[in-house]
Length: 138
Image (cartoon, rainbow, N blue to C red; front, side, top):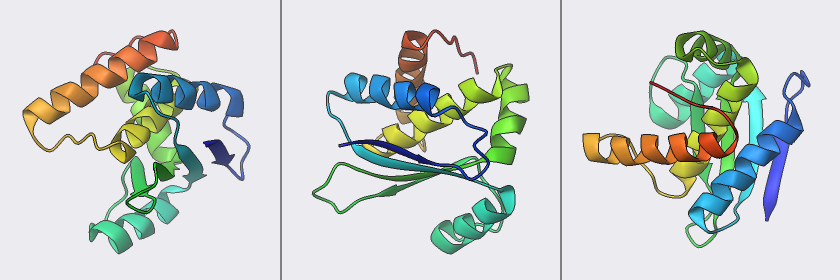
């Protein structure tokens, strides 16, 4: 169980992302095996089309392990993280943490297609990020 970061640019601070993963695991009451890859917008658009049929980029994608295993792979677009940092008035590192938290919550079964589900997910994100010393308002 644990967290692994794959980032060819080494732009991301593994320690901060690892802390975000650990806080999310604590919130969920379970530790997952999570691999995080940070990619370009072009790579993200290819993945989004391949796995979701959407011909556009996105900020984060989550891919579950086998049904009986906790965890999976999370992919974050570096470009989208920079854009959302400005939109959310956060630093890039805090935005990467939030996108990681969001991805792990998806692996744990959280969704945001319905308003009530979105409210639960956003409340969980807000609580986890507060433990990291980051206030989020969206």
